[in-house]
Image (cartoon, rainbow, N blue to C red; front, side, top):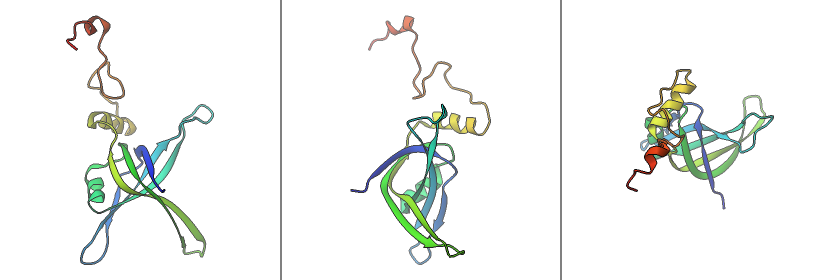
Length: 146
């Protein structure tokens, strides 16, 4: 079985091209920065995974995906090789994406994109968690009807 599921942030906007011919097909390529579970020397590390997606999914990526947003993809790993201009054989590995979706809300994504662009992020709620939910103070918590 060849199945992979990844969650990470886009390192740049997807690059989209269209195949030649009468029935052209959109082909999008992007790279996901996927955090590693364990840190090296106290610092977080990431793997940079090349992804390719075709057709309507590629057009969706072109329209909605931007550098810095967190997405989840599932698909299969594909390997290949080619000989470059210098005559050296180059081996490739990429994920052929079958499904892709956003992994966080637009507000959280926008605040992360702004932060990564060296702009101060202005949170909507002073006391919010990473999932976008507001923390309720204990004195109010007992008065909620649920």
